[in-house]
Length: 264
Image (cartoon, rainbow, N blue to C red):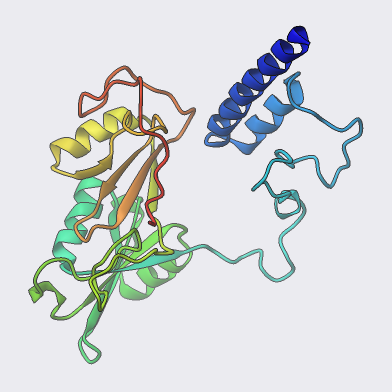
């Protein structure tokens, strides 16, 4: 009986370690998780795997079989659709353009002014200036086919208001009638960089506000900074999730408080 109890306890500890490593691998690539689960002797697997469920990550609670959304051609008529923009409202367009262009390295691709309706829009994206065409029509056509733009929207007069103006969606009380924080749906924008730790050194020198440095919290190797309106920007690596002994705030890689739900 003692032997069985010891074996069961050892298996549970190994399985918890496997699941933890599986979660960390999921931050890098779903396919990395698939390869790991296939090779691991601690994960229970069916004797036969159907082609419809080959990408199913696990049978644990909260895990969904979404493999069909990764397979096959796009639906008819959608092959030229582009995920072109995310729109955010900002208080001061100049401060926002300075952040997205001077700090994050984006370029202003196109802008439009609508004084008759009291607002302007500015489209920024991580492109080179030489690739931006001249002329309003050419810039419009270029922008509308460019994936991953941010549409920065300025409503006239917002720059004169006191304090923050727009709710960021992350446990934010800005704009609420009762001053209470709301559980928002919007989470963050995100960029990827060759080296998260080096990028965060640059962001710190630029005076950015961090809500998470690379080594703080439970998830290592990624960071969050705020734009001038408080919107979160996630900083992720373009390769494997690595850690370094110290980050830009001198936080060591060991330890951490674990995951925090920013919506609450």
